[in-house]
Image (cartoon, rainbow, N blue to C red; front, side, top):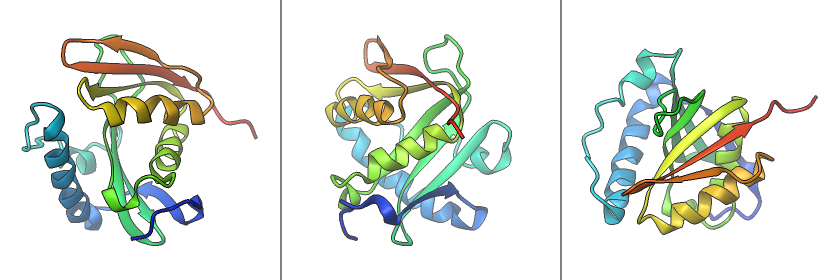
Length: 165
């Protein structure tokens, strides 16, 4: 897969039930990678719910030039406990598609699709994600996110405004 310096080949869309195995494979790779930053449970009990609860969970597939290269799992659970409209539960771009703008573009499209108050949590030791998310959030025009630091996690809270016609 090519690295994207031109983001024109990126598509972000809802993942179909038929694409569930593709997301499951990427989720396994993501969880294995995430394990280097802290303790991660590789069993993901909520995965099936993303296709069973369409009013509160949304699975997104990211493709680059027609090939799957990432995913996002969005729900309504407030990781901070303060309440939120939407939350990025998981976000992943395959290593061979990174460093060319794919992640920022895909994250921006996911976030901008649903205006409202957002949250996402990052393992405190995951420096790449702690650098990535403020940049991706700023790209949406949301400005600097509120940063809540907990013992082993950093939570970003921010508001996505509706796009202007």
